[in-house]
Amino acid sequence: MYNDYFVTPEWLNSHLSDSNIIVLDVSTPPPTAPYDCYQSYLDEHIPQAQFFNQDEVADKSCDLPHMLPDATTFSQAVGAMGINNQTQVIIYAQNNLFSSPRAWWTFRTLGCKQVKILAGGINAWKAAGFATQSGKVTPPEAQTFIADRQDANALNQQQMLEVATEGKTQIIDARAAARFLAQAPEPRPGLRMGHIPGSKNVPWDLLVDNGEYKSPEQLKAIFAQQGVDITAPTVTTCGSGMTAAVVLLALVLLGNPHVRLYDGSWAQWGQDNGLPIEP
Image (cartoon, rainbow, N blue to C red; front, top):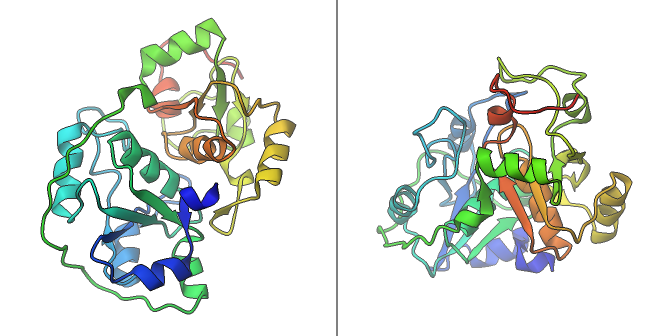
């Protein structure tokens, strides 16, 4: 199952010069430890990798971070990077598995079926002894990508309110336990503390180790410990829709095809907007 979603550094190294391969650094900084991901990319990246900025290739019509882009915005951005609908896209991140699943989810939701994650990210690449390069990369010849946006994959605020009110769909929050339990303030200013009523807490970093998901057995044990039914229809959420994708992909890996993501997540729900919360 993992091979359907991930490639190893050894595989990527042997296919790096394939004409149909495009490699993207999709690193996005966590709000709790912000840093310049693009500068880090310029300092060191996998050869010929381009930088995909998840905060720029996004819906900029609202002030929420890295919201899912519309079909035209995405098509133009990835087409300019030399990606068409047949391209094999390999994505990786600098920071554990923090931002790769979100990029994977974005590409899949916009109709890119040929996308996989480099297991272990750039750290695994370097640990395997493979070379890196620095500086800007000139993209290959522009291609035409025709997006097919799967709107049902992403819930908006009204849909999330209906899910929470009806109580028939499992909600999983990927934030740290202290934030979920209103014991620690949110890193984004102006947000209330707490969680969406009825949701369960699976901190995203419980599921990963050194940039890779833990084994299926370990994932099942973690979800069971947190009271999660891994087969139930589920909506994942987090601080901004980033690590919600870590939980989403973990459930997909375990065979659950009925998982959606609340795009606005707590950055939207936690505002002073009258939406219900639990401490």
